[in-house]
Image (cartoon, rainbow, N blue to C red; front, top):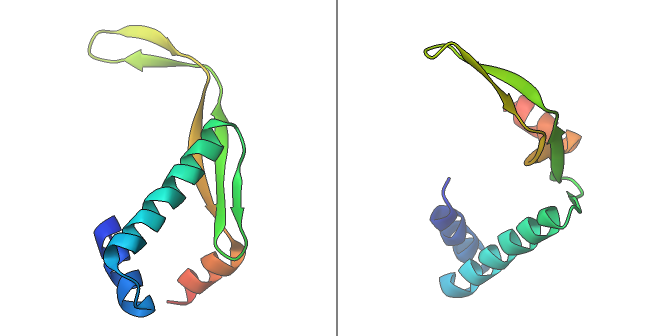
Length: 92
C-alpha cells in the first residue's frame, strides 16, 4: 500500500478531504523522522515502536577486488511491531 492509497482510504472512511489527510500523514512522518533524528523513539500502543538501532563497526570484504574495508558504527531507524499487531497478522 502506498502513501496515496493510505490517504485515499483514510479520506474515504473518515469523510475528510484528501488534501487535509495528506497534510496529516506528511506531518506524522515528519514528526517521527524528527524524533528519531533527535534520538528519541516513538511508541504507539497497539501498533508498534519506531526505534533507533545501533550497528557496531565491522569489517566487510569486496570479493571482486579482494580487499577488506571497515564499515563504521552507525545508527539506523527501525520499526518494532506491537505484540497485538504481530498476533493479528499471524491470524490472517
